[in-house]
Image (cartoon, rainbow, N blue to C red; front, side, top):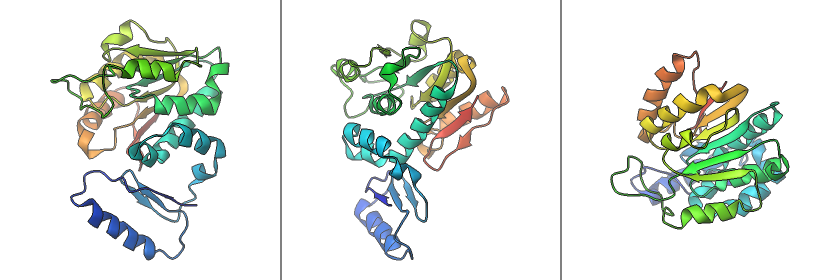
Length: 248
């Protein structure tokens, strides 16, 4: 079972880099258990998420771009966190910076979220980008993205899509108890602001995933979040995917 993509960030010559990856693959004794992409190159792994037919079905349905298709391992980690949230007796789901809603849509399909009427999923994003904003723009930011994301969840009434700046908008719309939280704001100040409001609302056993935590380009977030969480007795587990993991 292999999963190979050509998406790597920060390389000077992508063609040369990929030739090196292919050369490495050619020299692996057992051509199995290889994952390539999203700045990951591993081999000899079980890659158990490739055996999860339900996950792969939803992932293939909702991942539309080469970058989205490269982050399968990250998606699998988030789905694991969401499954843990469903296991807990109470708490809603939160995603700060949902962008196009791909990850949340996969999670909703996987755990049949529309049928879980005792749970609610809160999605936040600006959905557009203006000059001067601290975070960088994404290819599909624009005036119509908010409506497109709302339409994406039109069949899931217990998902609320909110347009606004985090953390400011959290004072208007936010759950009191959280069983799963995913933060991907690309901005240290905004992520600390979200933690200030939401972290104490995580119920015992809830999983929080910091999407940017392990990436050098977003090191400012790690430097801000490490002491903030340490003061509360928590330490982030940095994953090879670049994500950070905390269990409340």
